[in-house]
Length: 289
Image (cartoon, rainbow, N blue to C red; front, side, top):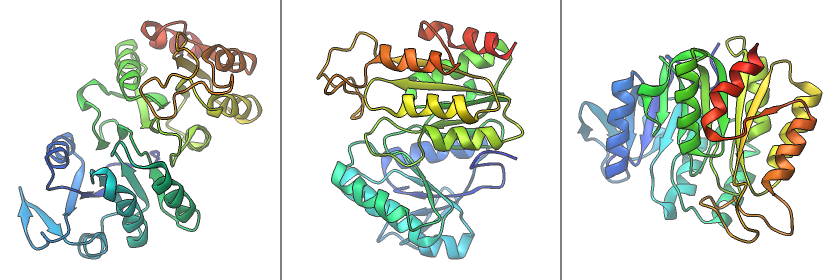
């Protein structure tokens, strides 16, 4: 069993004719992902590098059996792209787009409650099950099939953690970049539940950052429910209050969301926290012993 994507996943790319969409489509296909269709309104009927292009996701799903959508639609239309993917019945929509208005995502989040479609993102690197399927923008060559599930708010730190896990020999079962926006689809709790039930995952590495209370909620859930060892890293220890550090959700507001509070809560709940980014892999190795 793999978490959310596997070698049999069939991917449709929304925004395939854009520069980013085509570049990363090639990268995913070279990794081994089954890219079965692309969608760009008004360009249906065409073929790009052997990939059929449709006007709508519904047409793509009907003709190709696509069950996963990878979204590179620009911010003004990205929320509608997620809703279109859900209406077409894909099981998973991975929205890479950054800069989607918060109001748009509020409406998407509400609509998805009535849908069977799971959304990852937006503003995320995507998801990868090493050796099977890559849906996103992460570099595939640093990943190795293994036993550690990775869930992260930060794309760049995900790559660093993955590289260290590969070097240590632990490898990864599935890596999920949940995104750094204030309103997202799959969150820490969702990912932890999936990894907890996945027989191919033996441990989890969680990467959080300042802002919000998601890490504290995850810590409590780990303490009460997690059957597997968890290690973590929290970014943003030196961030001043009121300053947004990169991600839309990474801001200390009203005295809440500080890195030291998150680290303390995680440790109190039995999670080992890496003292620096360079020791993430080392910390996971110690936990797995």
